[in-house]
Image (cartoon, rainbow, N blue to C red; front, side):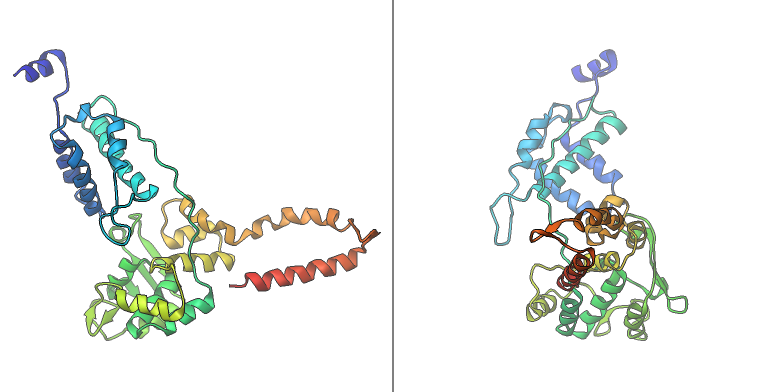
Length: 327
C-alpha cells in the first residue's frame, strides 16, 4: 500500500523485479531465433538477481556476475570463459535494461556496461587443394553439402533445411527466406556449375528436402563423419561454418568487390565483410606503384642499377611471391 501511494501520489515507478523484466523480455522476443541462448543467459543472471528490484541492480553487480562465468563442460570445465562470451552476456543484460528504461519505462535509465577487449581471431579458410582433400575423405551425403556450401556460402542450417520449393533449376537460382536468414533478410543465390551438380544429384531422393541421408532429412552435420574426415585429410582447427569463410575468401581473391560479397552472403553490415578485405588488396596497387620511381633509382653494390635489370629482379620476386601465396 505504501508503495502504491508513492506511485500514485509522488510519481514513483513501481518496484518491478528482475524476474518480471525477464518474463516480459521473453514474451516480447518470442520470435527471436536465438531465444534459447537468451534463456541460458537469463538462468545464469537469475542465480544472482533472483527477487531483486530491477532499478536497484547496479552496473558493477552485473559486471561482477558476468566475470564469474566458467565453462560448464568439456576439457576446459571450470575455467573462465573467453572475453567474447562475457561480452555476449553483457550485451544481453544491456538489451534488457535498455528495454526496461526506453520502452517499458520501468527504470529511469539503463546502466552502461564496459565490454572486455577481445583478441583478433584470424579467419579460417581452406586452400583449394585442402578443400578437395577434405571432400575426398567424406561420406557421399557429406560431400554433397560441403560442395554446396563451398559454392554458395550458405550456412549449415540453411543447407539442411533447404527445400525444393526454394530452388529453381531452370533459372539456376536458390533462395533463403527472411525468417531463415541470420540477418532476417532474404538471400538470392545464383547457382554456379558446382552448386547445380550438387543439386541435380539430389533430385528424386526426397519430395520436400534437398539434402538427405538414407531417405530422411539431414538433422545434423554427422559430427563423427565430419571429424573423421578432417582428421584423414590432415585439416585441424576447422568448423563447418568455416566453409562459409572459405567461400567468401575465394570470391574476394578472385576479385569480387566487397559490396557484392555482402549482398551474396546476406551480411547486414560492411563490417562483417571487412574481415576478408586483406585477401585482395589490389585496389591499393596503384598507390604502391608510385614507389617504383624511387626504388628504380637506388644504388646497388656501389653502382647505379639499370632500370631494366632492377625491373627484371622485381618481376622475379613478384613471381616467387605469387607462387608462395597461391591458394
